[in-house]
Length: 288
Ligand SMILES: NC(=O)c1ccc[n+]([C@@H]2O[C@H](COP(=O)([O-])OP(=O)(O)OC[C@H]3O[C@@H](n4cnc5c(N)ncnc54)[C@H](OP(=O)(O)O)[C@@H]3O)[C@@H](O)[C@H]2O)c1
Image (cartoon, rainbow, N blue to C red):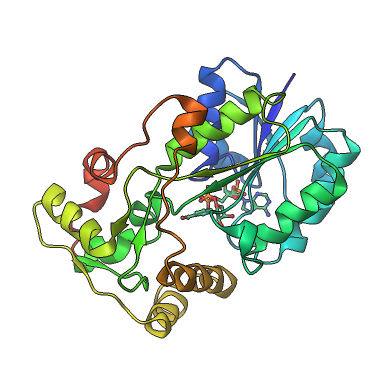
């Protein structure tokens, strides 16, 4: 038995690998950048080249594989980008696909995850859709630059609230679903943190933890879009998906709290304060 982890060097993938290894399950880490995988894991797992946009990489990646953690790389904005790999998994009779989806997509057809979930179901692959809320790692990753350089949280979420979840907790949830694949066949799980915070509250926690004032500047959608495309040079497809997600967030779709994480793992999810404290170095001021 072997489990393939796609996007293994990513925010969630690396914690899926970590949890699977802790469970003692044979794991193969996949991605387009083998060097990056080697840096992340050293000799701890096997690696394989997998590019969702290159069908020639599929058969080697799926060789001897029984279960798959599937994620959609953020720059692949079209759901169809993942269909050829889903078809390839079906041909290989994969026992379980745990797809990293998104909270609320069951009733929102706009994000690509909606169609990807439907396609996995349509081809008849046994599935466990994992639908997390927003990652805490958005603050330490994509949005950290403005925090480090300007003491600003530059996110167009208005006054809305978000039930942030740590990517490490999502990784543990995915590994649990893949480990207990018989019990969780054809199920869906909405994974959130235990509290729903506004970005003003996030700014307050980051200020307390970092010892300097960090402000939520509440940019407009247009300002955010232009800044990320023009100044940050982030690919348009990626920025447009995030714009859609923040528009939904403004409507209150990101604030719900569930106990699915506890139900799956028997653990409490990490709070944002705990996350900020253990990532203090990332939130330090950087002078430009
Ligand atoms: N951020 C959030 O708050 C949030 C919330 C809910 C759901 N999500 C969803 O989570 C997903 C992102 O997960 P993440 O943050 O863990 O990803 P991530 O950190 O952005 O990493 C992307 C991964 O994709 C791999 N990759 C890139 N191009 C590829 C290709 N052509 N073929 C195969 N692999 C490729 C990369 O590895 P290589 O460099 O080795 O290729 C990397 O490991 C998205 O679908 C997003 O919508 C995000």
